[in-house]
Length: 231
Image 1 (tube, helix red, strand yellow):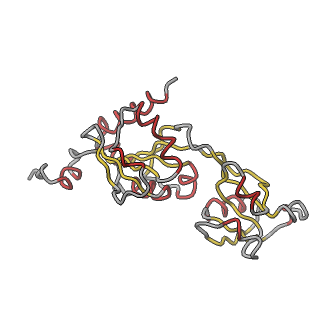
Image 2 (cartoon, rainbow, N blue to C red):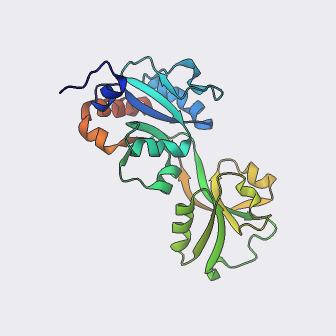
Image 3 (spheres, rainbow, N blue to C red):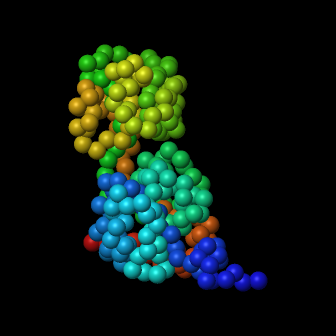
């Protein structure tokens, strides 16, 4: 029996409702504006208002709605099919490595890096090649553990979601692994960047099942984003 399309939830389940595009809260949202506009996506004006209690917004295209969530949650929404497409940093994909996600496009925005940082006062006083264990503070436990495991070092990760820069001075960790843009926060807290693990940009991501079951609809949105990136 056909699902009633008048029911929005049923329509989405049937693949006939609007595609859901998950967008990250925060600084990337402002950089995304021109890319979305070139792709023909014009969300309701308050979608960038961080004080708005709304999380889902209609767009000028009735076949697309956007939801605004935390950057780390974008990948989760897309991986589980709650959103069919999304935009998130490569750092998120490195941390979670969801097999359900396909990342066809590098949008070239939100440039930053995942780096190791440690106190400027003690940096360089020890030989990292002799480490066997290391206390690391990070919101990227998987990235940190993989990075040090490749060097034969067991990383004991203290999982923090913020105030990472305090960890070394308070004896919580020897180093931190965090996202760095300008390095000014590190400097203000007596830390220096000692190693870059990976350079990061924002990516268009797609739920693989949605691409398989709605190839024309999802493919059309990928094509619109690709055209938006053309010089």
